[in-house]
Amino acid sequence: MVRRIAATCLAALILATAAQAHPKLLSTTPAAQSTVSKVGRVELHFSEKLMPAFSGVDLVMTAMPGMKMAQPMKVALQSAVSPDGLTLIGTPAKPLAPGSYEVRYHVVSTDTHRVQAVYGFSVR
Image (cartoon, rainbow, N blue to C red; front, side, top):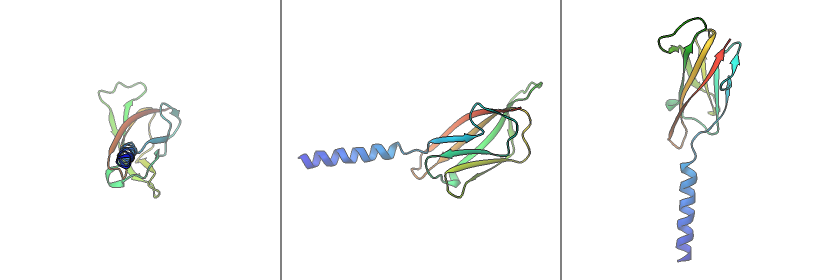
């Protein structure tokens, strides 16, 4: 009886740990809510290896100084996962114009759970 209870508790602990093993965003370049002078690429560093086929990033301009935008404008961006699998990289086709941007990403690691979020930064 004690062994059965111990085995059940151990199984529950293992399942709970696996269920929480989603990739966590550790840092970004440019940093969230920062203002930078130029951006060569967007980097998102994660706690777990990503599955490249199911991970990607989009960049959207949300505001431009002196101009009213009717809606956000998607920026041409090439998305890739680094060779070590821990970094999602977005490289714009052209230098970013001054304005406010949102980074919209989705990632999947080996736990197969999709994680998505958005953060912003500005270019002066």
